[in-house]
Amino acid sequence: MHGIPIYFLRAAPGVVDDNLYIDGDCLYTKWIDNFAHRINDKTFKALQYCFENLEFDYILRTNLSSFYRLNVLIKFLQETPRVGFYAGPVNFLKIEGEEGRMFDYVSGSGIRLSRDLIPIVLSKQSTISYDYIDDVWLGMALLECPRHSLARCDFIDIEDVGANFILMIAQRIADAETRGEFHFRIKNGGAQTRFILDSLVFGMLASRYILANAVDS
Image (cartoon, rainbow, N blue to C red; front, side):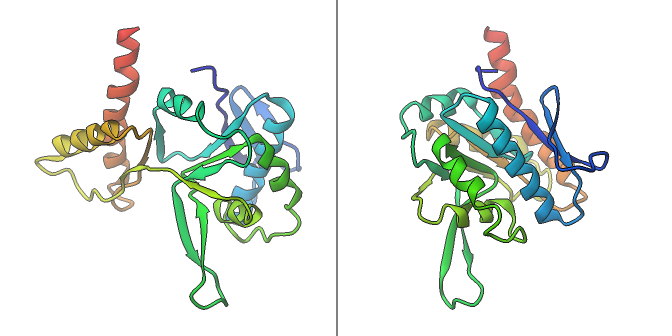
């Protein structure tokens, strides 16, 4: 798709060693009970695999709650620096033990890294605690690297399917398109309703940007 290699990262209970295994478009790593350690382990092994085996200028580490307009993302990246590029929606976290100090890092919903930063990240695996989730960890590893804040269209505040649900979602998508945004975050409601709400939003995005393009082509 668009000439971009895309991999799904999975920690699998059947993997018991430290190797990374490839099956089609899936990269498998061992299962670790600690959530933060598990996410870090598979993220860093995937970064190393891609760095050693693929030719690329940038890598995007995202998650299942994100939807991308890849054609717009590609066009955007053609005009961005190919070195020192650490970009995405920026979050802030208060650093424990340092009153009033805020730490900024790129959200795990969409971390864009230029190739030259990956060896820096991998070289610090033994110096920063894995107790930090991977997006925070990466921010610490790249503490000296400027953050490039990128816009994201969020669907994280929908609690139920109201009378104007379809119109509201359609308008929000259209507004984001007008602004040239290519990243959508979909994470709505509570555990009971999230699957339904998120599926509806993903369906509308797919209809607008995937199915429509397939028909046009």
